[in-house]
Image (cartoon, rainbow, N blue to C red; front, side):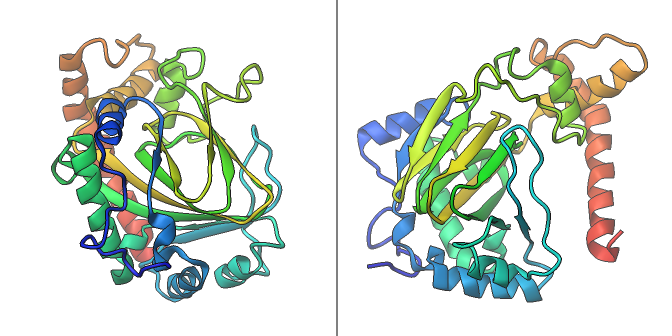
Length: 304
């Protein structure tokens, strides 16, 4: 039987045996791995609650969402937003359409905030990291996908725990540290806003890791590890819990190098000199972050 928030006093959301603890602690933020969870037993992630959440997202700009329809291919673009369908309608028709719905930052909804806090506490214990102190902007997101739909090849800038709640699907991940998968120039382009810069690799369609996930199973995806997803013949509901490090000098170094290369320089590859990466991040990297934050604030406030 599903519970509303799955109270911490009842039982843990993630397994806490020694083997699981070792798995999380040794691989977190470095290497993909599969894990067990109990999010599928929580009422707030069942379809009736998701329909109510989608209704709130529609009527409150504070709650962000995205929905699209179409048949994207693995090495192509995502779908497009339907002009004749609302978010709630897209969710109501999820089983018969070709829809993909993202309910973003749902922890900003009071009903879901307690769940995120519970997850952070348990994941901090399992990883051996104080996620509230060493990582920032923890985000809770829900993905709802029509049967047999593909999520195209892409990468994300956050470390991500993806927990399957309903249905089953295949997740294909690629090693971001392999220069044949991600070049330095592709990383520079990605961190300066070219989100589709990473190239698809026909020679490795199943990636370096392939995971089959069903309710109660999940996959950890380290930041910037490219991936794509193939839903099975069912409606899929997945919950994403992701984090960004408080400090990441490498990102600032990639951004600095992108513009340095534009004026004909040949900058040092990030990761080779932590001191140099730190200097780049403290200078141009911070300027870039400030300008980006100001632009996003203007867009949010004035719609520009």
